[in-house]
Image (tube, rainbow, N blue to C red; front, side):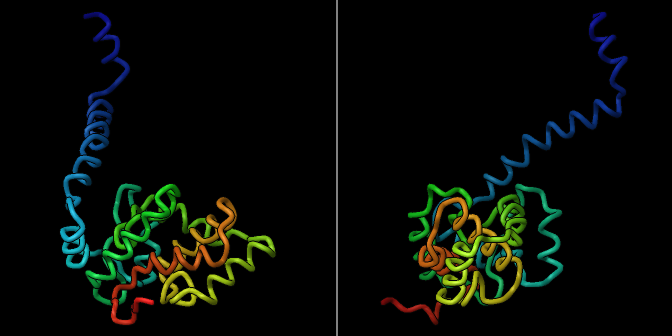
Length: 193
């Protein structure tokens, strides 16, 4: 009993309540995020295509730095998602599953990974690395990491620099990642070769 009183003497009720609340929040946030995740690809498509929060605005781009790392950037930016194209993208991105920084779903990205990659966007590359990056810029479907210079441009631009620097990606490999990771929506322009 003496130990409890001694402990209570060092921690006010307010501090105890705040600490208890933070512990409870830490346990409930991941559970809530997992519970909201649909189980299969069709359910994920339906959820992401109808309830996305992503926009191309500068305000949205700036807000990412203030988001909790567990928040999700969801949905397309510019055009409605295409079910067939979405399925192909998620399936094809599996070949990069060993590289944790490459989002496995371009329409559902954790804010924490987006924050990290946005910081890498301004990373200076060596001349050889810059040539690989420029190759991807010139040869990717969107002529860059995204169709416009929005948050995705900075996230996937930062990803490109990380892949070239840390994983020795070529320009061809980076262009492939960018092409598979397009989060602009649409699918009419997509053709099978």
